[in-house]
Image (cartoon, rainbow, N blue to C red; front, side):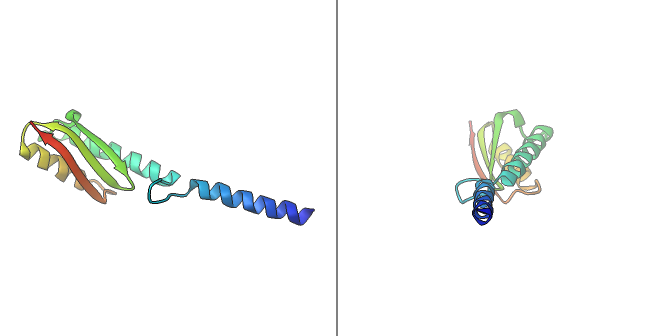
Length: 101
């Protein structure tokens, strides 16, 4: 009986630990926290930089890959937003979907 209880406890622990792990389409708990920090840093940098109207740019992060979207006035502002995002530590890639209008 004691062996069965120990085995069951080990299996349950393995299942619970696997639930915290990531996959190609799902982030681990740690990755979610890391991505939240990256998103906050990128958004803060965009708002602080005078070349970009940071409030008009949306930022999403998944596994260190940043997606920029929104509307800006000039191609230069679009490029500046991308450069700012790339400069943030932890950013692996920037996908710039910002529209110029």
